[in-house]
Amino acid sequence: MTRHLDIDLLRTFVAIAETHTLGRAGGRVGRTQAAVSMQVKKLEAMLNQPLLNRTGRGVQLTLHGERLLAHARTILRHHDAAVADISGAGLSGTLRFGCPDDYATAFLPHILRSFAGRHPQVFVEVLCAPTPRLRERLKRHELDLALVSTAQEDNTTPVVRREPLVWVGKHDDDAVLREPLQLALSDPDTLDHRAACEGLDAIGRAYRVAYASGSISGLLAVVRSGQAIAVLTQAAVPPDLQVLPTGKLLPRLPDVGLAVAFDLRRPPPLAVEFAEHLQRQLPAL
Image (cartoon, rainbow, N blue to C red; front, side, top):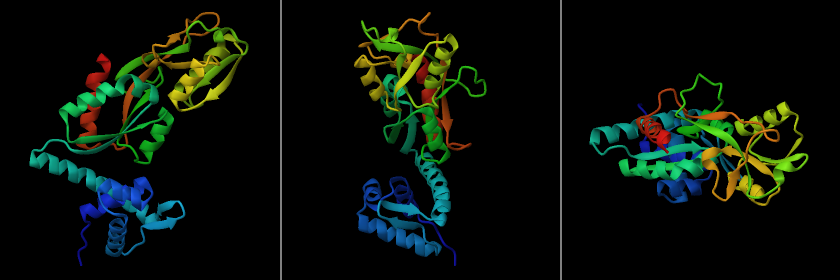
């Protein structure tokens, strides 16, 4: 007997895999939790395999569920692209986009607003996190594409824009004079954290990482309190803080590149269109 994978069942299954609960998945696809449960049972009966394990915190995919998830995402991407192309309705669907906090603050409002003007039927889900966390999400196919930071010496990745890293402090504050220097930095494996530590080590300046977080709002709060200085991309420096001069006390920091990374070698049309939009808009912002 020939078995056919129903698109609605696959869409619900992907929603469950991404939200980890039947209730939240139901909210995403517009169905009750009971209806979602029935869809799962129907899909499991069709494939004759268990797809989910219920836990106290929600649901987890079985080995068969993990295998189906990869196929389901591919099928849905091609299905949605085909419908949009043949119907002449233009691009539609949901795009999962990742962006570091500092780029989101500086660039994202304009990027999303201008893209929505061109493609009003596309819904963009945004996840803000440091570049290493975004790359992890891409590997797990939890994002379609992401704007990521690349090192100045990286010549293997096409760069959309370059941004200087700068030291940031509170206006009329003497935090830069303290010994050891107190720092508020992003996660230890990020380019800005490494650049700050390597630069200070190179000039022999004593320092202490007083606060480390992937949240730019947390870093800015510490800087605004006068307890530490931070390292940000220049475009992300808010007007109430200042770029600190480099010299004997603070080393010059490198530039970082902004690049687009996909979760698939052959990304779907929607992801390609958003990437091209980034490449058109970012250099001018």
